[in-house]
Image (cartoon, rainbow, N blue to C red; front, top):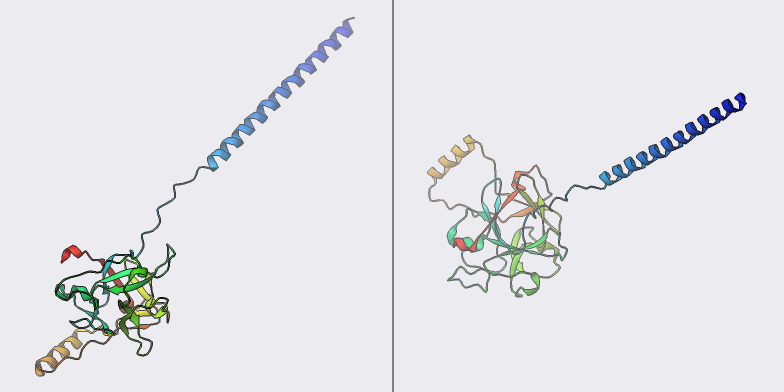
Length: 251
């Protein structure tokens, strides 16, 4: 009788141990699942998306386009607007600002496109006696006689010619030149506008030039050469330009 009692006690002990073990396993499994769920939830939390970068040039705005090397600005040559005028660099002049300010309109419907047609504010149909600024918002409503910045296919110089839809020599890609500077690449020949008139003269060259002018004070200075293009180079300072937003209220 005593032996049966001992066996019964041992069986009960084994059963209790087994039950406790099962409870522990279920509890531990639940903890692992909960921990895994928490980790998954944390992993789904994402950082806020940063705003898109500001475009280098905004469509429908007027800009002064200046050369980094010389500080001179993109200018339609001549006091009276004529067709097929040369485009040069010249010192900024409030009196001729309409030939030195440029309207940029996208030549591609793609929202992120950097291809533009650059239009001087002075046009043949502008009132010569007033500072009139054209206010077009797209290329679709430009008058047929509107002159735009063009790479002349014959001379290789920059001129203004009547706008023709789809003409690659009139489309310009605005590229980031770093540090707030840009390169202006022609879609037709894939080259960038370069200021060939600029020469980095040292102090001795400047003195020699000054003395030469004193000796021949009445000698007419040669006019500035039209701008042209060359293979794009971020290391070439004469190919780098700055954009200054121009307000019509300045006039």
